[in-house]
Length: 138
Image (tube, rainbow, N blue to C red):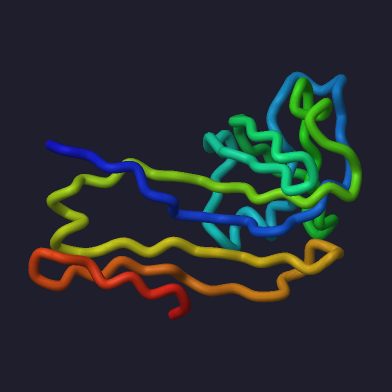
């Protein structure tokens, strides 16, 4: 079995609401945001800070529902500050043979300045013989 790692979820331009260096690690995210794109608690995430170009990997934990919380914890709290804009990516391992048969969908949430949903769409790979058709908005 050959696998390929593809993005399945993205929180785009979410703002840091707080940073807690004293917590043991992870990033706290409002469960409403996590559920909208399909990020699970404890799922590994890659994060990019658009304000300073720092990147790190961590895992998600649910914050307070409805709070719009984005709170890097532990050492990651030193890589950002309140108000910084982040992109949060989640990936999944896919069987290449299944991908060729069924394609793939990724959910993307674009946030406004208060971490409300400004836009939401899916990015898809649709198999077409020996190639894929990429569609950004579905």
